[in-house]
Structures are given as C-alpha cells and as structure tokens.
Image (cartoon, one colour):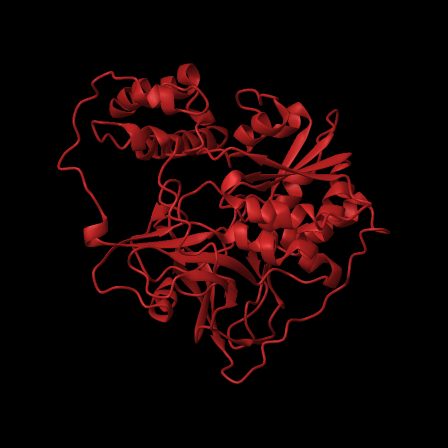
Length: 435
C-alpha cells in the first residue's frame, strides 16, 4: 500500500516541550494487561516521577506522576475505548520547576538480565509505537527459544506521524544506550535498525554514530504500508516469515520500537519512571503543527487549545488515520500509547454517501499484507459468524492495518467489522473459564 504520506509538514520540526496542563488525568488502563493499582490517596502531594500506582501483575506496569502537584480526586475517567476506568486527577503546582525524581540507577554492564527486565517494568515502559504492550514481557525469552537478532523498528509507515523520525535525529545517544540494555536482556548477537527510505537523513545520522563496540547496522527499506508491523518488518529485514498466531521470537527475532528503545536508554541509567512522551500533532485542523514532548495524562481538550485547533474540526484521531482511532470525547487524556494526534476539518474529510454490497473485486485480498480474505471475513462478520471467522479464516492474525478498508470500492468498513468481531471473540474466550 502507498497512502499519501503527509509527513513533510512536521518531519523537519524539532521536538519541543509542551506546557503542563493545570489538571492531569491519569487512567490506570494505559497498556495491555492488568490495570495499575493506585497507591496514593486524595489530598496527597506528589513529586514529578513519584510512583502513583504499582503494577497489577506480571503483564502490567506501574504509573508515575507526570507533574508535581496534589492528588485532587481518585475517580472513574473516560478513555478512548468509551469505557470508564479508575484514574487519578492531579492538580499541577503552578510555580513548580517540575524536576524529576531520581531513582536507583541500573548499570547495563553490571546488571543481570533479570534486573534489566525488572527495571524496565519498574519504569512503566510499554511499546510506544501504539500497541502499548508491556516491554518487559516482550523481552522475556520463553524457555526453549533464543533471539539471534534484535530489530529496532524505525519504520513509522503511518501517514502524518513523524515522532520516531525526530527521535532518531535528536535522541541517538539514548537509542544506542537503550540498545545496550536490550542486547543484554535478549541475548541477541546483532542489531538491525530498520528505517524506511523516506527517512534517509535519520538513517545517515544513526549510521555515523554507531558505537564501535555495538553490533549494530542500519538497513534502509523501500517505503510501503504497513511495513512497520513487526511481522512485516521481520520478513523485510530477515526474510523470515512469522507463523500464523506466532510472535517474532518463533523465528529467533525480537522487535522493539525506536522510541521505546530511546526511553529505556533515557530512564534506566537514572532509575526513573516514564512521565512524558513525544507526540506528533498535525492535520488540516491544527495551526501549530509539530512534534511535542507531552506529559502523560494531559487532557486532549487542553492539547487542542494550546496548538490552535480550527473551528471546523470534524474528526480527531489518536494515532494515525490508518490504524488510529477517531475519538468521541475530547475529555480523554494522552496515554503512553499515544503516538500522534491528527485533526481533520469538515472539508478535509470525504465521506462515502453509502456502503455498497461487496462486488467480489478482490482488491482487499490483494492489499492484505498477511494474505487473509477480508471479503469473506466481512460477510461472516455481517452474519455474526464470529467463531467461523476465527477458526477457519484466521481473524485473530489481523493486526487492523486498515488496508482492506482503504482500497474497498464499496466503502465497506472492513477493519471496523474486524475490530468489533475480535473484541467479541476475546470476551467470549475470557468468559469460558469463568463458566
């Protein structure tokens, strides 16, 4: 797929610090897995970087204070999924210098593999490419498996987003420090930084700064969507195909996003927790486009006020327009998995008049990067044949890239059907043990 890139508006803009919102809203569900468990109380004063909530289990991470302030309320907060979850409201100290608490440093040379994995979990680090899967879980090599290649994902194929591009140009030292931790955690013998050809400046910059003692190479690949998906990237760089239902470790590889790598290199030497992340804010409805370092928990409404949103805003996407989600509520907040905010005006949106029946053209089959049959899956979804979708047509392999919906001449919202179907299947499977 080759959707319009729309990256030129922000890929040359350096990362800038975003203002601290008067009130920060921290949902306890910011990652896949168990929610974080709150350990602070209402009325308590907290310092930036202080632990607010501990991990709710192994597949979970803690939350840290993005600002110094006072815990004003612990209550349900809205999320992008539409669900209300437990969260913390922090009133920011207006005259604080917002210094970050120092923790217990982790030395990559002396720390064991287990200590590094624990440090990554304690820092609250999840995949910053959008999936928000706890990084320490991904790095834990299952018994009987081994990793020979660590892939650093700098592809960023999603239209409009330039977060990873700027991180590669501005945080090279943190990236290479993070790679040292990742090498020890995974036991990999070599590292490949994958970068698309539309970021040649980042490829050249990183290539010139590779430490002599690190087994790192930079590999530039052709521009394609959705090459940033880890299964696609493993095939593009290594020529290995991840099996259906499997993970990259099945073919002896581990894939880590480049921004996640930079955070590991930035936080672990100081024993700190993640309190902010780089986000691209762009689109036809934004006046002050750019790449911003934004405190986690900053309300979306405050973000749009600061960057100057157009009066005729029609849709706001968290993430990119292909794999992101259109928000229904501006009172949600920035989370660890928010890689971009794309704002569209009414005249920038082309909506189909109606959805037409499938004409069996096969365009969606050609576009699917993992060779599913979106046409058949769409028909089954319409008739709520969810079990057949999963059992006979590998629905759960779909990673919701949106390519099928993008090429469909009948304007069938296939990827939305698949998201709904997958969520129903997951709920059913979760209910089976209880039954």
